[in-house]
Length: 64
View 1 (cartoon, helix red, strand yellow):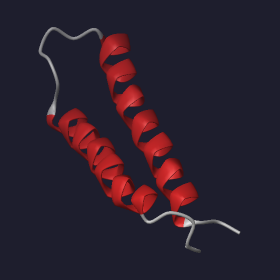
View 2 (cartoon, rainbow, N blue to C red):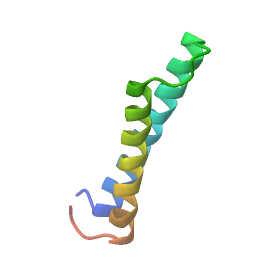
View 3 (cartoon, rainbow, N blue to C red):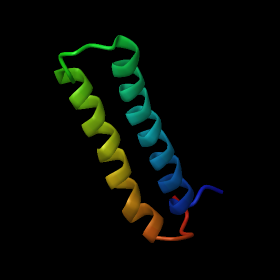
View 4 (tube, one colour):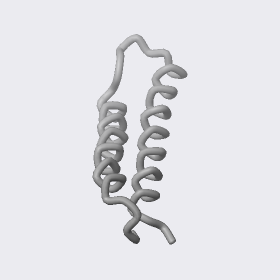
């Protein structure tokens, strides 16, 4: 059975993968222009997933 804590950890993992993917795409592209608007949306989405996961971890072992 999946608990809210498991779901929170899964959201954190996905958020970290999104942030790592955005940073890797910027590194591979090697642009001097910095981050574009879609990359900023990706970073905000990854941070939002991580922010959404923290309360789920605190709820503990209740079923999801």
